[in-house]
Image 1 (cartoon, helix red, strand yellow):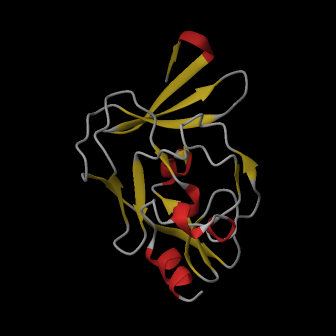
Image 2 (tube, one colour):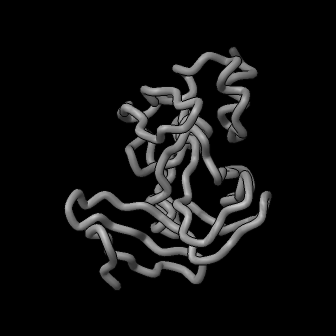
Length: 161
């Protein structure tokens, strides 16, 4: 572990990533230590555990199937309304949505996998098209939601509406 500027502690968790933790707020985020091209597979993942209901650490793969991620450090990929990665829950891979530079934080669009989240939150991504309050795909107008890459489960839910 190394301590850097602005109270950030960096811990290498994979050849391509490190977790950054703010020593003041204890918030954590996952950042790259390598450059990635658009559409590149960053990592494979699997369920460490499957739960019947969502938690703030799970990724939804089915109606009552919410997985704890393995490798566990992937849980530190935070939300953004302008994501740079996507959890492909069908193929169990994390892929890039655009080119990613070294040191960049990995972020995904939570409603891309979550129908109705355990707890909503006010988004602070500050992207141009920030949606504000995030609580899952069920709470986003279809014309906005379909602008995002969506998991197989969310696509199935939308087709069933």
